[in-house]
Image (tube, rainbow, N blue to C red; front, side):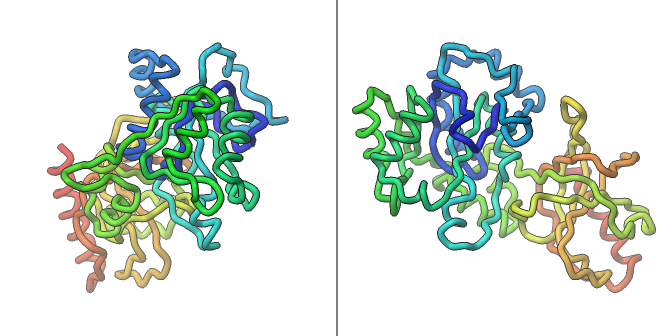
Length: 341
């Protein structure tokens, strides 16, 4: 997958799915589908790409911003997602916005769907001031050479969000570009949206969040050295350093599946328990993310783990002693083991 934040290094022509796509949830997946179909991505090829992690190339990581040699001209439009970074809400409010899928996670999730290019448009004052007509002409037609566009029904664009999905469809039509408007997606009577997923995660309702996402919510981070308290009570944990932009769910203990990143793939999932919080039993003051892998031993320092949340087990709590904490962790492990069979 080719990831770029520069309109001078995009692969063209494109079939574009346009939006923020935070979470790459089931609604987003429906918006992406038309551009995959228009680029004639074979079903067998998409399936093979989902078997392992896609290779991610970024213009920032390649000297001279050169397009990688693997990005050959195909004569067909590149299935492309065009998103915005930072999130427009962060730009207008000046407040950091936690993301369900920070850029790297978004790239991997989209790559697993078969998307070949992610364009992260820098959301700045110049972009914010473009009229709907200018956005289509400058970005979609001239720079991206779009041959097809797909957006959600509630998509808004242009200065002060004055452009609607129907406006985009009408403007693009004057350039001979077909635009698909995808209706709002419903799950169990509830609209699928990033906001509802965030709310479910805040409440510890992992099942609801995962249902709306169409997959388990994940945390990906590098294992760093912690206080090593877990070793002293028989439960050595991996302390994860996450992207500072990552949205954290409700503090507490979760049953999880853990994958260890290898050079070209992830390991088979390993059952575990994860604690998110400030560890009140030992008077912690800053939040940490700690994972214990059940029936697994080995050195994880410096390795990248992806933790899939499967079920919320209990809220964070303070115990009177380390022995009580140890007994509760054992009970958490027993429960997680039975849930993750």
